[in-house]
Image 1 (cartoon, one colour):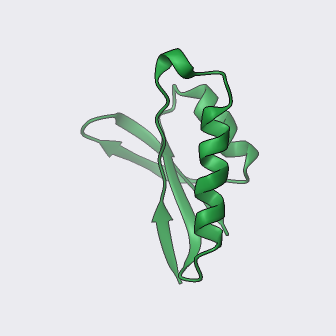
Image 2: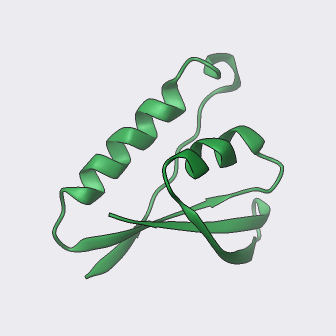
Length: 81
């Protein structure tokens, strides 16, 4: 079994229209349909409250934190699929 890391970015002009929710749904469906995958990981900046709320709604659990040279501090979240 394995893990995949997912990510999505929505242009600021297109936010609050359900695009991130739709993207996350598709990403999780694809991961769940792959027999090699049992864990999906995402990382979210602590100040990105909208993305964190969306991730939480899909059952992700906090696994820790990491420092990313580009994005700074990130929360690591995972969900079983």
